Amino acid sequence: MNEQPVPGLLAQAVNGLFFSHIVTFFGTLALSLLHHVYGFYLWLNGLVEDIRDFVLKTESVVDEGDDIRRTICMLKKLPSHFVLILGAESPSYHDIVKLITWCLPAGIAHVSIYDHKDEVDCWQLYDTFCSLAKQQLHRIKWGKSFDDEVKSLSKSRINGYSWSPAVTVHVLRSSDGPELIADAVSQLRAERVAVGSSGDLGVADVDRFVKRRLAGVPEPDLAVICGPTFTFYGCCPWNMRITQMQLLKSHKNLTLDRFFTLLHGYNNCHQRYGK
Image (cartoon, helix red, strand yellow):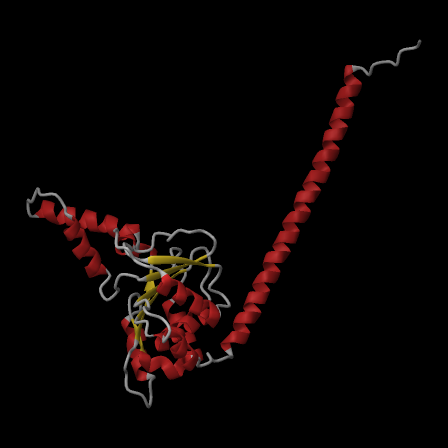
């Protein structure tokens, strides 16, 4: 019986090299195609978002106050301070304005927008509110992070109305999170060293410092986290001791029904206060 000749080492090396080049070529080609397809998807998604934002800028927020008032009559409790935690999302100013206008008839006194990425532009939020809900401007007080120019301009644009704020709007930054507590400890320690005090810092000392820095911002009752990750992204950790947290898939295209679901969830939650 004739045996088949075994390929020599050189032939095996040539075949292996040829095969590896083919694999590398097609693998690189596949990755390149996937990269371009994903890039096109991102471009197309951004274009859709830009078109949506352009269209929404021409629309006014519909007054749904009667529907909201009828719904909240069935609830035993409502949050006094509603915090929207944007998480990984970029701000949709149209939807944030909708949320603020819904909180007016709901009797929610404070609305805070927290973004650990610090992407929320206070001027753009104010301008969007003026474009979409100017008739409600006299009922809004612009709180933390809004400069004096915004507050003054807002009062000057409420022609025909008396200023009677029902909702205070705050924009919370990353500096209002764990960084604030670190600043409190650092500054309080420096003050004690300056006066020659060697006593330890207490909880009450830090609490007073935080309250001074967050003047006008009460403890949140309800924090709504955008996205699938149940984390508060460092939002005001000193003030979240009794805050109820709920997940929201996205604050973009937020509907009134979803807003009602959040309020019903808060109403149905029994706060035990550590008991």
